[in-house]
Amino acid sequence: MSRSTRERPAVWPAPATWRRWAAQAAVGAVLGLLLTASVVLVAWAAGWLRVVGVAPPGAAVLALLSGLGRAVLVAVVEETLFRGVLVGYLRARIGLPAAVGLSALAFGAAHAFNAHVTPLALANLVAAGLLFALAFVVGRGLALPIGLHAAWNWFEGSVFGLPVSGVPRDRLLVVEEHGPPLWTGGAFGPEGGLLGLAAMALVAGVLWLARDHLPQEPPAAAA
Image: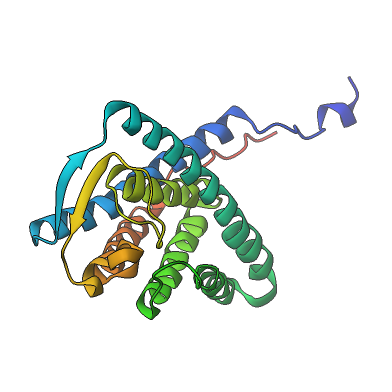
C-alpha cells in the first residue's frame, strides 16, 4: 500500500467521533429537559398551570413520535443554519462575540412573524440564540445545541402540552394555564415569558460550569 493511500483521510467519521456526538446530544437533551421541566414545575407550584387530562394511548404515541421527528428536524436545520453556518462563517471574519451576537439576532428575527409573538418573546428568542451558541462553542460542534434544541421543543410541546413559539403541538398531557402571560409566555409558549428567560439563564449557568467536563474527542495518537 502506498504512503498516499495510507494517509488518505477517512470520509466516514471515526467511531470515537460518533460516540462524542451521541454523548453531547444526550447532554443537550438532559439540559433541554431541565429547562422545560423547571418552567412547568414553577408554573404548577404557583398555581398557574394544571394538568386536566392525558391523551389516549394511540394518540399519545403518535404525538410523541411525530413530535420527536419534528423537533429533531427543526433543531438540525436551525442549528446548522444559525450556529454551524453563521457562527462558523463569521467568527473568522468579525470575531466570535460579534458572530454569536449576529446569529442570535438572526435567530430571533426568523421567528418575528410567529403567531402570538410579543417584544418580550423576540428578546427571549435572541437569548435562546445566545444559549444555543454557547452550547455550540463549548461543545465544539453542533451535537450539543441540536440535542438541547430538539429536547426543548419536544418536551415543551409534545410532552408537557405547551405551545412552542406560538405553535401548538399534538401532546401527551392536556394542560390549562391561568398565569400572567408576562411570566408564562401565554399563547406563545414559555419562551415568551420571564419563566422561560430564567430557565435559559439556569441552563446557561449549568452549561458554563460543566464546560470542562463535556465529552470531547480524544486526542489523536502520536505517529
